Length: 553
Image (cartoon, rainbow, N blue to C red):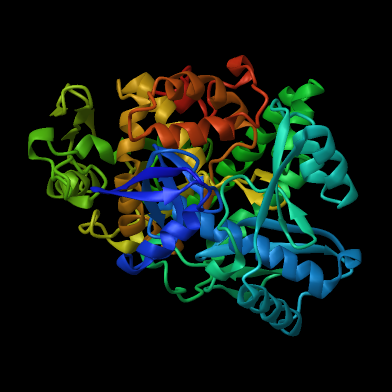
């Protein structure tokens, strides 16, 4: 007779026979949830639904309304798309099918080989995807040795994966298969194709976009809205990485192992400096007096503003840098979110009236006593730092709300030159596993906050969703209004940040809610070979996070 185990679900304890799958248990509870259950949290650990009950345990259901849930959905949809594309176009015609980066709410993909991307081809691929979903085919998972994985992906012509696993420390690799199609994915999958109901393919630029749901609206597809300025910056960054022959983590590790990382660092830094110089030249030609720099958290806005100021001097201007953060309200007056935590991401956290009064006075040539915000005490301080506008003076103002005209309402639009900056990661794990830009920024922020603000990695992770919500509401809607966009991501940076991030992530204990995210990030960083920070120039944007900058950041 099969063993019977106690499974605690919420406040209820149910008995289940040994070997029942979590998928079967989830079916009993699905009617309670608006969104699809795609994973379970078993005794505090994320677990796929095909796994079985083998003892007493406590479980929570994870739906597509959560970050782990929606990523599982999107990852599984990608596997189905890959299988369908290879079936329709023919594997013999495909040299490489790559998920390049995020566009709208989906992924921009390119195909290399004897394949022309047409509307008709995409319709056939989408039809094949829907057929696969209708058949509800199991997505199987197996563990194989690293050596076997390298051989298998070489055979499948997935050379980025072959290169990735040459530097794999673990002895085994988890491979997912959909009938005869095998692939590696960084993260969890749904148990079968029937879970993936919402997706759409759009022809775009030289490739196509697979549009997928987001956790805020997991049961529907949002309208496909190309962000052309952002796309062009991402495309340019991808060309940079191709020029450096470092498009994936495996390629980066190969360069590190060959002792060539110093060259990569120098070229990448030079490329960024060239772009900053071009922006400064455009500003000088525009004859505008206020440069507004905005972007999401940990984009390197402060270092960028200082480097831009240097280039503006080269163009004969006298720049003055101002951090919008210096206009934070004293902490006791700061607004709070729905959980009672301080919300520093919203516009109301700033003294907008005082900022505009100071800007107008500067514009009139009046000397202004400038504030400095003390992040330790939570107070705005005045330490005798004054500023006065001259004929060739220009203000370089950086902050997350810089592109929002409500922040600088007293200044005419004609007087402002707007720059959007973000760390748009151009490096991917391999051809089918992209690195979200949000992961790179989170790691940057953890390292900086631990060093500068006395904030633990646990606290940074706990606040991150609130930060992301603020970005979605107050930053991203304005990005296409920028005069120019700048990508602050450095292709080598995660190999450097690894040394700083790992110790503080290991400091999060398994009984804390942030442990799951810490474990995910540690697993992610394990892909990278480490790089010594001593070769990083002292004016690098990366110095804002790891320390040693020549600027006051």
